[in-house]
Image (cartoon, rainbow, N blue to C red):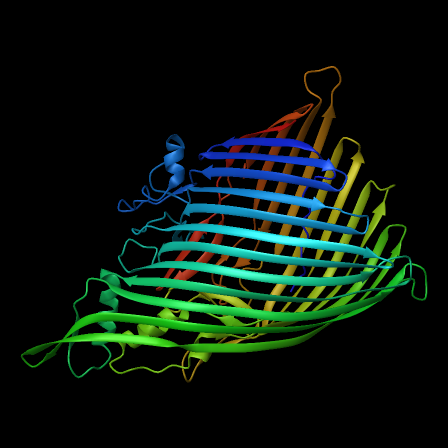
Length: 617
């Protein structure tokens, strides 16, 4: 919807040597990074790197029955930094390899492979306090954690021909993760969720673009992807959760009393989601159109995606039926199984005009955006629970109950960038308008069993962004950025029951901050004939808000701000940095949701500090 971000890492062709970094901080923070860059010949270069990090966690679960010790590895490795019942105590490790081969001036090949492991306690959700607009203490009884293994491989091949360049990028990702949640996030024994996923994804993109000094330039390409996700879930209803199901059964109008005799009720789910897609695009551009510096471009992209879902959800529990003085056993076995599929095709146009003179730029662009639809696996637990409560076999429209539709948008943008005062000040500004239909928003499933995506009618986002980069002196620099956006539903009615609707038209779209602000400053002092070469002092002030957390706009996070600072000493190939984040210890909510009639939130990270030691050799 909003474009892509290219991340360029340090090339072993540009830098050779070894870098090491050690970071220590409060709350048990420990980070170790090591990387090596080498160029054995002009045609081959490579790099290897690895890092490890651990944190003791910021917040504590106040429930005396919470026992994360047997799971948390960070507590085992760093017992002095690990406090019992700390939430989000975590550790992670990764390895990365990069190999570049340039057999000729026209041909280059680059391989990147990486592995990442992460493990953490979860999740820092406390009961929301509407008097303070902040989460209260965390208090849930069942264990919660998340662990992940990810392997990425990619190969990029580029060939420079006469007046054109062609590139092929091939990628593969393998992901395996698992999580355990106390789904009610309360001291009650309602229900827990265990979920494991295994993903294999392949993608290929081939692009070809013109090169040279011709005013007519073009770029085109094709891409395709295929992925398969295996998901296994186990929802376990416990004592208090079974009591809720029992009450619903008692109130369902059954002719005979039915009593659940299980201590727990497991709901098993097995899901296989397959996606594959194809896209082709072409974008020609004409430079110096009518006058020097003016360029126009028009592009089109065709997109096709297929989504299929093979699903199986089952629940078995034992009951007793009382008929007069007779009590009979009864086993209730509910299953929802089948196959679903959807296909999406879309034609996406784009048009832009750009004018550039002496490094100053002005532009206008119009484009269509699109996000494909899919399935909400969390809804199957809700459907099977409805079956569990019913006295007869309930039937559902699975496709309608579990799927969400694509999202579309038309994006209008006008902006520019100028440089003044001999390059000492650079200013940029953008005005934008997004008309969105069938907007995809995230909320918790009706029974609280995980988050789901739903379509929310039409909305409009409009606003502006401003940025400034100022360097009045060689040793001093300032960066400023400010953004304002007003994102509201223009047409959105949600059905409550067969005869009534709730109208959210005119309400703000959840999770979109109205304002974002950032101000940075850095001051550098150079020394001669001293034990240090440079002293760098930097600070960053940032803020965001107001943020509405739901469609009704009755819960929100007001504008909040944070101050971060760093002081660095540099000598040759060594540097020492002392840093602090959220130095004003601002208290704010980073996430809010509602489940089982209760509201929960996650508190932002408090003031924390540490030191970094960097070495190059």
